[in-house]
Image (cartoon, rainbow, N blue to C red; front, side, top):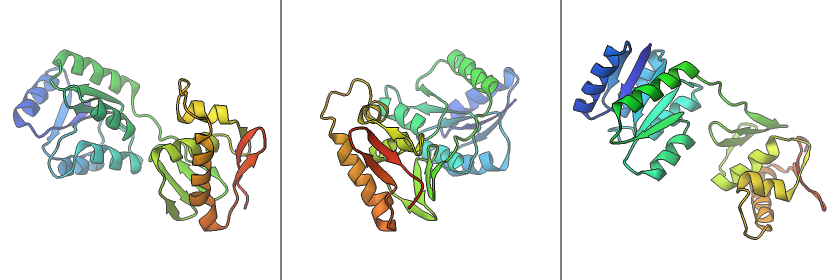
Length: 224
């Protein structure tokens, strides 16, 4: 089993490399993000252990670029102690697992083995409605060849609609999927985001794909 370890702390990298080698792993080491990204694209690995804080290119950027390139090698990110935002961003950029420093080597080994057993996952399917494409993996949206910049919440609402093209999705369903079941704010917030989406995905292109179905909800059509 071949593993890429991207870690700039040379002492830690050496200890991990030695320990994993004793467990039967073949370990390549990179000490900065740029080198790690190059190695990950040049060689096939069963898993990647990737530190967040790296010189030249941080771990988030490395992970994001790999996922955007369609590389779904399992990635475990090493985050800061008690860094809940680091952990959230690690998962949002496409990591499969994370471990906070300082960590137990026994736990790292067990979780790394679990990642290798599961293997690489397939890139999520890009959802389409006509020439509108919604990419859940890259958190990207485009109309034809034109990239459309969306906020995370705008993307979440559009994603919920794009999963069911041509079907009516109720306001309650959008609240549950784009916010959460415990949301107790004003339900009209959905209308605000629908309006924002229309200004971005429809108006500049002369389209009306995002349709309000009175009393029922909203529908994303593929037509003009």
